[in-house]
Length: 119
Length: 108
Image 1 (tube, each protein chain N blue to C red):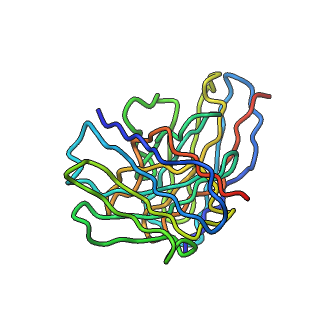
Image 2: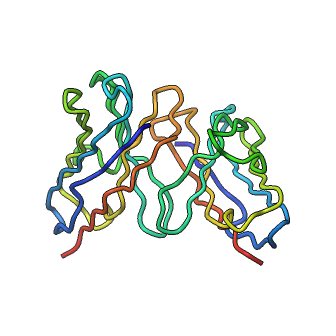
């Protein structure tokens, strides 16, 4: 069965950097498009970034463009989110999700990684 | 960007009754709409995709309808485990993918 496990969350100061990882198992990761979605605890859901299975076609939420970079290592079945110039408003639980370009809804959710940006 | 507006914010329902949740899109999303359920401390769970198709292992008391800009999630005969927050999400026109603000279904 599909399993997605996020890691790398933590507390970081404003302006700092963090890299989230998502270890995927139970499916052929190299053939799946992937997303990051975040949620401020107690608040709603916000899509953050997308990357096609072959590494092409990356899309970002406007507010993270130029600061966040989505990447993947298909040999390691791992998705990444590199976050730079972090802001207080980036504090959230970050989920990695599989969802293709044409059916971008999310069947499989991990436990998420909590990122707290605070001085 | 397509804005999804969910109503009401909170719905108070007695167990055994039905609940009707609404999601309105700022422009047509055809049938490219999904619904999720989220309980406290848990990740969301996919209930409905393509506006009306139940996801795997979702009970038949959950049903979705609508197309274009108006969508409804109906939960018939609410069970105790159904009290949660429900979100809609459109995947017709993106980026960005967008979610509604959520409807909390609480025990009356």
